[in-house]
Image (cartoon, rainbow, N blue to C red):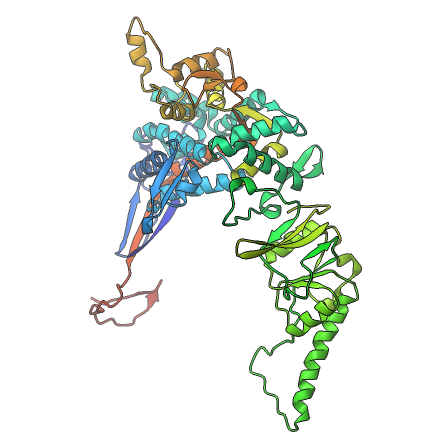
Length: 610
């Protein structure tokens, strides 16, 4: 059993002679980017490491990171449906990239960074987890050729518009022209141009048109669920997100699905029994089922974050009882304390009292006698949702209660038994702000009511537009590579031939058929149809607008941003320090230790004299 740790060291623009072979003088010089480079004779930093540590640096690290990103990750999630056999005999079958990656046991630090990339994409927009990994891995693959030619990673990152998005044959001409002209603005310009293309081809929609919204959500989650339940899931997701949506002004809408929406999974029943509750549901029952009401219409709700029981001493508390009556006095003091708490609550005439802490039997007696239902030991998250749903305020002390703290926004409180468990419902709320991928898609459309075509059409349009923008640079033969990874993967999953190269096509006088990817690329380059993509069912070229295959605008924009920035980050890593600490197996004999003279310690290391 081993414990592994890694240390990343990011390379700086200033590099030694090994990283920039064009610098030969001992005095600082300036490269084509206008950066001052140090002399190769300057002293390098000295690192003191343990004997058990291993260190790798230079181009070896770059190649290892690129290979780990391509092989370990891309080959796992590029297929339509991936199954992974895990420990303890568990098997996961899914096409969600993040669901697969979080179950993998990855050791390489670069591959771990790619997994974090997918997790970040999922948390930010809830979709596009596979696309961002495929696109980032393809960008690293294209940049590998320039690493072989000893180009500095910082230069590659700055010239990402031409170095990563396109593959150049004339490397020296590329360095002399592209780096000089676009050293400082190419990276930002590439993102700006890509996002500008998204704005150009995007289509605004009316979020109030329910039939259109249902069709869009269904098309976006078509691969997540079976077609039998697509309409049901889309309807539930749209109802949930529109329920918790808040207009924040200036035409913007905020939809916080993490805070206000909870998916409760209950064993038993069928998927058709699923529904959206305009309120809160939690697995609790009233404290005294026989004496407290389980159904209340228009309840007055009080939420507490304090116990309704006698306080116990934090440490050992001793009480000396001299007379027999002293024990009765102590019990009476406890009763008076709890009675006082209940009186302070009951004077506001509540119908339901919910606390996150304990509730004594005496307090239950007072509440049931007054006709008040009570629930105890509720989770903090559920209590917060109830407060948002019914308009109540969580109170820490009963003596601080005010009339404005009582929640009156709930229409119905009811306790139902489903299977072997009881569930409490607080529904029909006036402001109910209380299937995850589906809700993420609906949320993205509500927040940014723009759509872009799916089926790889967006990536090919961005690629063709950027290629036209760079046509003014002479001596550079360019072919779009990185952005074409998405439609190429789609075509491969459809069983279409996409491997045939341009050289083979040009070498034949008569070509009966071209690859699907080349035909679509020509159409996008000629500006014939920006909506042309690949039909995932048949593998044929089709109009995504007619097939109603869409992607949310902000999902695609976030995919471009995250993948490009992650590729640059991994390219700048040129030093890895890793170590393995072996743990002692249980029951194993302890090895003999040499005699050590305690002369000092540095980072828990002991000095052994010679």
